[in-house]
Length: 341
Figure 1 (tube, rainbow, N blue to C red):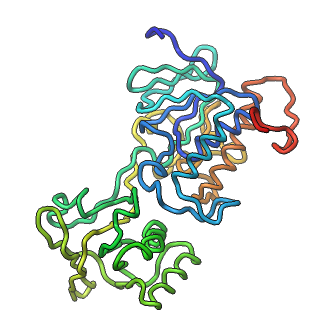
Figure 2 (figure 1 turned 135 degrees about the vertical axis):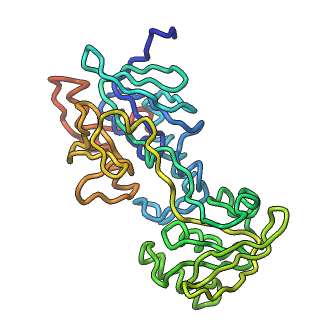
Figure 3 (figure 1 turned 135 degrees about the horizontal axis):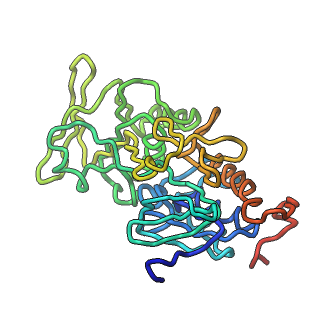
């Protein structure tokens, strides 16, 4: 492809996380082709990059499914519609063409001419919020971690988990059967996770299978050569104690950076893109946002809500790609899927 030539497609999807992958399926069911761009060199977004073995409990039909397995299933579901993936590159510019279409350009020169754009970029470029501890860098990647790629890496180890949200709680539940000892450090007794998960964690504590260290917060690290021997914690009153530890898992959320998306002239609200329901359209005609990056009154940051938004956006895009063509909506059970038996 020459520098002046652009791929031409119906829909350009920015972000190949779970919601972006499901958007391929929804567009495909409405006979719309998709090109997909992601800064990572693999599909799956955070599910693949940060916690492939993390169990997810709120996907309909799956009492529990590991994040990596969910991505595999979503990619398989999208495959019959032959999406074109452009991985390992970030979208740098989004501009309106003379035809009223959109030109998407990436950091390595890929150019995609699309009738509509779906932004499914999750939290944008992401990185962990690090605890403010002296000497932290010496332990990072060795015995201090912000994600779990393989839970067996913590088998037989003494693990301190810091944080009070879903990630901290879910990994506590998952590692309780693997680690020698699990401490959960949180600055207050109340946790922010799903009530059922919190109840399960508290039951593990009552049974002596984990130890809740509350109300404490991280205060220091002890060890040599990047290997922890203890994690020091303290109350707000300064009472300090040391927890014997081989590893610290710090789950304080992700720092969010929209990158070039912030320069595209879309309505932003606290680093999120404001959309209008039920179409998920942004302030720019033909540009839609779905998943964690989208916000509107009553928004819930759940994967299943992102899936619904993918369907809403696809149906709103259909008349742009197929003007004048009536859309007779049918359930997939009656319509069928290409390649399905």
